[in-house]
Every structure is written in C-alpha cells, then in structure tokens.
Length: 211
Image (cartoon, rainbow, N blue to C red; front, side, top):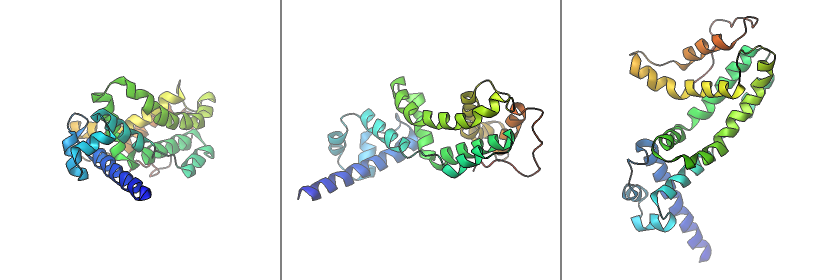
C-alpha cells in the first residue's frame, strides 16, 4: 500500500510539474495562476499547495527540473577538440550552443521570464547549470584566443555573444525585417570580426547549424 501511495504521489507531482512548465514557459510567471496549473494538471488547487506552499516554489522546482535536462553533446565537443583551425572551432561552438539551447525551447523561455519577472536570487540556480555550459565551451576555445587566431579578449564573452545570436536573433529579425530569420548569417558576420586575418577563408556553402 505504501508503494502504491508513493507512486501516486510521484505521478501527481509529475503532472503538476509538466503542466506548470508548459504554462510558465508560454505565459511567464505573472501570467499563470495556481488555479490554471491545477486545471491543466487535473488536480485540486489545494493539492498544488500541499506540494508547493507558494507559486514561486513551484516555479523554482520547474526551472530546476528543466535545467537538469541540459547536457552538452560529446560528439560536438570532440569536433571542437579536433578542429584544424579557429574558424572550424568557432563554428563547432556555435553548433553546440544551437543544439543545446534550441533543443529545450521551453527552458529558454523560462530562463528569460526568470530574468524579467523574478528576483536575482534565482541567479545562483541558473549559474549552477548554465554556467557550466559556458565554462566547458570556453575551455575549448581558449587556446585559439591565446594563439591569436581568435581576436577576442575573453572566451566567456565570446560564448555569451554566440548564445545571444542563437537566443535573440529570431525575435530581433522579426521586429526589423519581413523575411525569415537566418542565425547562420548573423554568425558569419560575427565570425569575420573574431577571426584573425591569417585564418583560412571558409568554403562557400559551409555554414554553422542553428536549427
């Protein structure tokens, strides 16, 4: 009986987290009530408060669960390690960021809403998970910066710039232009600023992948 009760408790909590993640990701923290989440999860609102005393506690649980799913693809990291030149290494870094960030669009929206709607005390949680992504990729690009093949003062700053291209290119493009967004073009323009003049030219048609 105890095993069955525990299983039911986990199933209920999973439904609450899944419903909350979908609603928070679509409408933000302030746009969702616990009643909305209870309806979507098919539970009583009191049940939510039994698991999470405050709506903020539920949001933090959702964010932590989604951040825990972030992982870097080892095959793409291997491509950076084996890159023959700085351009290839930079392209691989861009591909890793694109594959990681765009694989979890719900998480991306949760992170953005967190920065806009909630206090800075969530930064520790974000840094614990996302900071590792920046640090790992930075270590692979650092040698190219030290050799002068990438004209950049900071590997971290370089990675943050690539993340910005992936995250903000599409909404910014929609705001300024009518044609479909192409993050690869933004990456190519950025890469030309970073690459040393000694770096070999990129063959036509071989762009990074941004999904």
